[in-house]
Image: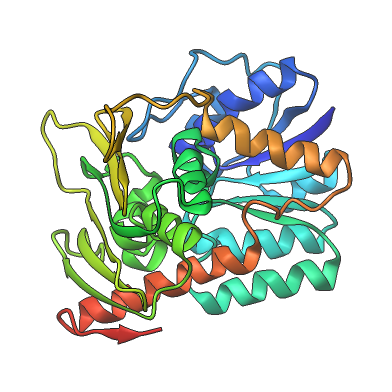
Length: 340
């Protein structure tokens, strides 16, 4: 069983920790140490984000807590580290982990800039270690089913696509880092990045983008964003995000993808397939949790000493950040079309 050092026990760290409980039961991977600078986390205080953490209370008695990243790596016989840290720490902590001899799983986005992404890719080669980025939607069965329809052309070519996610303002983060542009990149780079990556994964890099954004909170960057992705074949692709929908709204993600002969729509937690000929139906695919699937994949690939980048190549994760940078540039220019 692989031994894991979990770094960062915020909302996403808790999501991962809950998945590791299952992986431990399956004899795949076990969290043996946690590193977090927040003393409250050392007492087992859990943080909820915009998604449910999971199964319930966790027994921390068999897990060692650390304040210092390097000390944890030095004292524990770890197989890899799982980084659930603020985005501005992704590059330095990934590179440091690899330099100290460990493979690294790093949460999305890959980094705050494509320049940092390039440094991370270079580090995998310099230190001969593996790195995977947690663009988790590539492992969600609903999105994987969409990818299958795109690839197989069951309904022909894609003619249009729309993606949305949004909800309440993330006020739960340590030191309020999510609402600080220099640490998170704002809604555009933290939350919207999921749909940017999905579009990149499904369709590749667009020719250009045009984006409009709204800054609502003083230090946060763009909190609302709407982007059109322009492709040579003329398909109409749009993605929007808004983390200012407070009150009782909660959180929502949805998509609508139109093909020449059908459509696939995900809304209110349910996927429906609409052939142009015949009745609509609920497609049959796994209900498995995407976070579980991505961590299971990473651990099993490491155990087999095989590449962890089959689903999320590092260059593709870096391209996602590059596309987001161009969206930010377009927002800064009040929606001007920006070439990639």
